[in-house]
Image 1 (cartoon, rainbow, N blue to C red):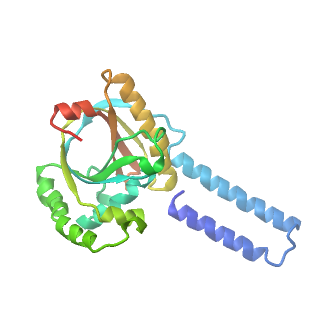
Image 2 (tube, one colour):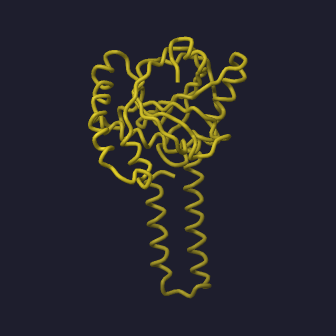
Image 3 (cartoon, helix red, strand yellow):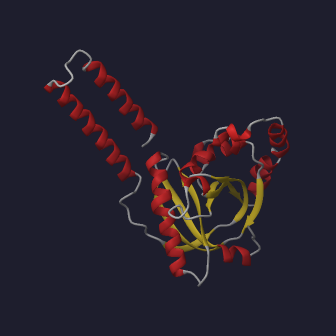
Length: 250
């Protein structure tokens, strides 16, 4: 559920308790008011599930992954957190969320249906061409000495919140070549239900398609970029073998 929806629900529950404070616990008025609140909450949840695309089919087509220089930080946690980590990369670049599309990318290495949340491996960062590398990529890589100094004086790293540990990681660079890919566009609300749809509907569906349509023995990965303004993500399923043939190694 999105933040605004959760806030409205919280206010509803607070108002409900205020309205029923002086009423008997089992009064008809209190039961009726409680039923109304539950109905509204259920309706809000169903709406968030529908706008997140849970009931949409995956219209996967053949296309091209654009490729470029990928400047990223590696992580291992539930995939639902991946889009949220983009904001820390954006802060380092001084760009807003409106600039995410075709800039911020997450690369997912595992099938979340087969891997527990704490062990799901992914990278979050930017994908740029040579000009973008000069303007943005170098800016991130130049932060590494500062990050290293901060990490050196930070104690009890294991006790830090996951996003704080993420901010202490170096930026890495790899060239991702432009290759054939399975491509799908899917709704994106930048909320919790949208993150769940990506993890448990889009990624498994893309991996299944890529394995069925790809060469025998190919190991696909999913690469995602999203537009908050357009409320849409573009997902690419690419064979690791194709990356390797074109000079990429993990």
